[in-house]
Amino acid sequence: MDEPVNVLGAPLQPCSRAPLTGFFRDGCCNTSAYDFGVHTICCVMTKEFLQYSRFRGNDLSTPQPEIEFFGLKEGDRWCLSAARWLEAANFGMAPKVVLNATHQRSLTVVSLELLLQHALEEGATDLPPASSERLV
Image 1 (tube, rainbow, N blue to C red):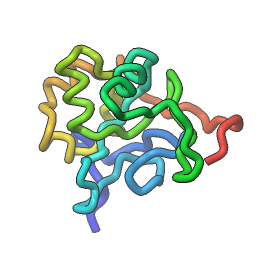
Image 2 (cartoon, helix red, strand yellow):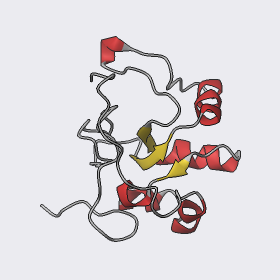
Image 3 (cartoon, helix red, strand yellow):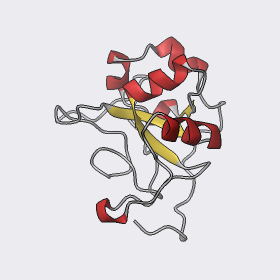
């Protein structure tokens, strides 16, 4: 099997281990044919985006321990659905994107140009250390 590739054409890098993200909950924005939501865009959560997402009916802040989801907060990295991210971008609410951790399948939904416009500044793409305050 081929190694996953990011939108820049390089090997896909981890998005977050704390909270543990990804369709497979492997820390990466990996995907498969079963990932109908295309959860492939690695983003850094903002208060504004989390409020917008809740308003649109996708509450990412409230913990749901029954499905092992502990809620997101500002600064967390998370693999978002490409369609949800594009919707947020259309409303001026898209969070910043970690390009090296964003799967190339995102490009089936969102243009590279739009992702580049919302990219974290160079040097801000390193994965933060795992947090000991969150257990997943």
